[in-house]
Every structure is written in structure tokens, then in C-alpha cells.
Length: 135
Image (cartoon, rainbow, N blue to C red; front, side, top):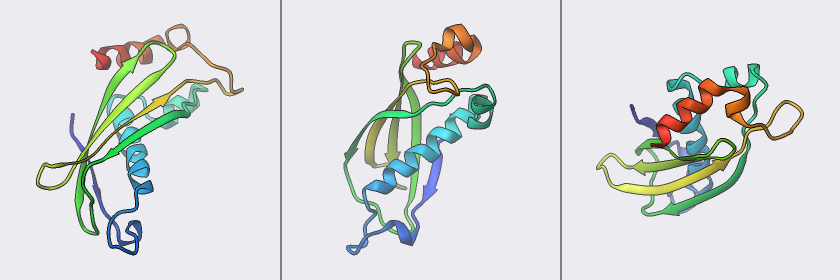
């Protein structure tokens, strides 16, 4: 699948001229939204079907700094899906192909009233897509 690319903006850097760590989390969300769109389940479609998918945990391992103007390529993959919890993995590389950050985020699925849902029971096609990607 095509990588998501993010060009580092000046406002994302700190006083030292490097990207503030919190921005990597924003890029993960950008890449995750792009990924879901590419697999046919964009956020608009999920929300139209009454599905919300909050982040329940997050882990980032910063390897190298990035700076203004860098282009960061972000690979997204499904690390785990067991019907209730989804774990998305991220690998961020600079233009030289060197890993600058690895991360993952865990998500659950809720209905419009905030109650947990099992995707296989309510949205089998989406669940099957995630299961295939987790292999």
C-alpha cells in the first residue's frame, strides 16, 4: 500500500529546531485516516454507520529527530485485530529511508451511545477486511 507522506511544517518544531514529540501522534492520526480511506472504510463511512473508534492506548519510540522541511513517509499496518480491539502499527522514515519513529495505537469500537460493539456482529465486511490485513 502506498505510504502516507507528511512534510514537516515550521510550526511543528520547537525552540531547538526539531519536531516536538507530540506532532508524531498527529501524523499517526493523519496516516490512520488515510489508511482507512484506502481500504474503503473512511471515517465518514464509519460514522455514518454509527461507529466511533477512540484511541485507548498509544506507544511511540523516537529514533531520530526530524526538522522543518523533512518529508516523513509513514507506513501503516494492522498489527492485531480480534473483533473488539484493533492495534495499528506505524513506521516513520525520513527521505533517506531511515526510521525516525515506530509506534502503535490501540482502538476499540463503540456505537453512537458509547457502548462497545463487536464488529463481526454489526459490520462483518469491515471486520473481515481488518482480519485479512492483520495476517
